[in-house]
Structures are given as structure tokens and as C-alpha cells.
Length: 246
Image 1 (cartoon, rainbow, N blue to C red):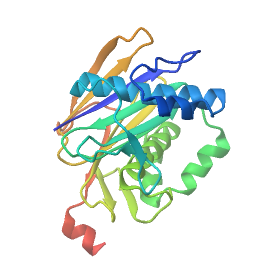
Image 2: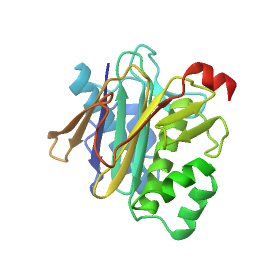
Image 3: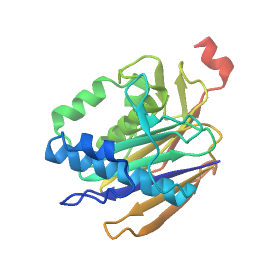
Image 4: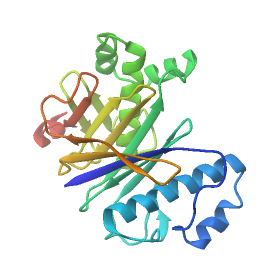
């Protein structure tokens, strides 16, 4: 099973909306200018990714899940997740019935006060791992991005929820709501991204889409490889029996 992570930079002006249904365009017209551009760009990127992967020419009808996430009305269509970081729009698409959660953060974009807030919501084990890294601030942001991606997948709104625990030193995580999930995160020059996925996802395709409607394949990650790079962090669920005992 493969998943696809595509991103594009938000540019000035209205994005192409030719693959969007009219009711989405009409709704976007009620939004403030900045939010409207982000709303349309994200859904246009999703539409273009659906065309590339599945050959679907217009974005299928959307609704919202119980936790407020956008999703397709047709449950046979793939799960997806949207994320924003600065002027970068991201879409994660999971194939073959898998689930998806995407988190993105701009490096060095947060105040010291915000970083301290992140640390308050982390466990002692997470903090110990962070302090052992070469760049603790970057490591804290990477864990925060990973937590956000997992919460999007599981539908949990509380970022400090005890139902989700990360154990980066051992490469494990524990989720009471979804006891069998995984997450992979990497650090780009300007951005940290994290993709939370179902365990059956073995490949992650990274794409960039530009304003000229050109696709660039950035990377294909074999998720189960033991060594994926110095700044790549992958966490997998604790075995089921250990989850029940914890």
C-alpha cells in the first residue's frame, strides 16, 4: 500500500479552481481573502492529486467527519488530511482503505513562549529524548508535528491527551483509540513534516506541485527500511498486549 504527500506554495492571487465543484467556490467567496486563498489552494491541490493518482477529473463531494475533518462523502474514496505551515499547503492521501494524518511546522517560526507551551504538553520521556538531540528546539518541533499528525488520524482534539503517548527513544507510540498506527517525520531545510498512516502503508511518495501545474517527484520513502536518514523519525505502535497492560 502506498500513500502520497503533496505540497505547494501559496502564491498571490486566486488558484485554479477548474476541478472544484461550484458550491465549494461559492462557499470560499464568503471567507476572508487570506483564508479563501488557503481554502481553495488546499482543495485544488487535493483535486489535482486525485487526478494524478486515480484519474478523477473533478474533486468528489466533501463533508466533515464527527471531529470536524474534511473527508469524502463516498467512503470508498481514500482518506486524506490537509495541513498548513506558513505559506505551504500540504495534502496527504492514503490509498486502499488506509487512514491519514498530516502535520507540518515551519522551523524557527515560533516564539520562545510557544515552544515552552509545546514542552509543557510533552511527557518526561519525550523531553528526555529532546534534550539528548543535537538541536533540542528542532527535536521538540518534530515531536509536536508528529503528535499533530497522529491526532488528526485518530480524531482526538486535545493535544495533551493521555490516550496518545510517544516513545521516540524506542521508536514506539501508544494510542488507545487506534492501537495499530505509525508515523514518519523528516526535517527539510525550512519545514518539518509528519505523516501518520495505517500500518499497511509501505511506501510514501513525496510530491511538489508548482503554480505552473508541474509535478516534481521529490522522494519515494520505503517506510519499513531500518535506516532512512539521520533526521527521519519513525514511530510504530506498541504490540497490542503491551498497550492493554499499560
